[in-house]
Length: 252
Image (cartoon, rainbow, N blue to C red; front, side, top):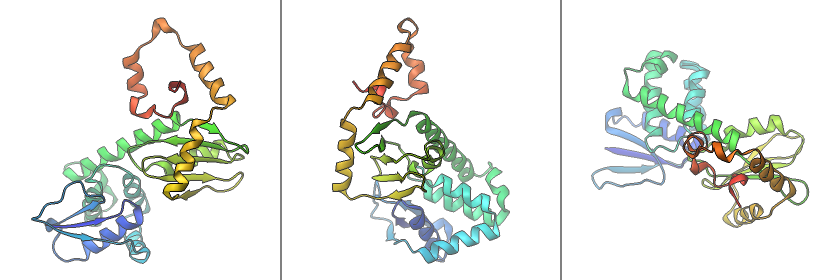
């Protein structure tokens, strides 16, 4: 088995898909994975693929022209997932798309399509959860920052939601797991920033400082609670504990 691996970003994934498809070794004889690789087998051959914007554009053009733009959007949406088999699943579904068209996404008799839909739904639930559970802290100068620790790379999917609701504020959303930051200047488009370790360490300090709005939210959360009706099990279902680390109402 030949394993093609790449960095966990969409351009690198598309490049990996192109290289694998053009390799000519047969789809059954290869597998695509994102790095870091969890386990390496001495029986397999590993080929690292560097991102190439020109090759990535060729894949995008082929999918949108030969299948559909919506099909491409579905693949890109699924690529945010953390599951190790995500890239290989995307590759297999893409091959079905070239064979059967955009209706391939509804062909649940194929195992890879069913897995693709499962992964996409989980990513959607995670995005919806962090839309509700992302909490901002005020910083000196009037800017706001929120820290999250999602399982998947969803910070860019969250950005349009908060850009629509906070268009005239300076704010940032920092993904502490994947070291990605969305920066939104006041009345301007947001952009993705990949800070250095030193820069990210400075951002982590920002959460330690309290502010009036944080204290006000905690007071509101405590005042509306009805202790006699507390249901920890139901709360965990609606607000999983792994999402709570940066929720100010649970930080005392």
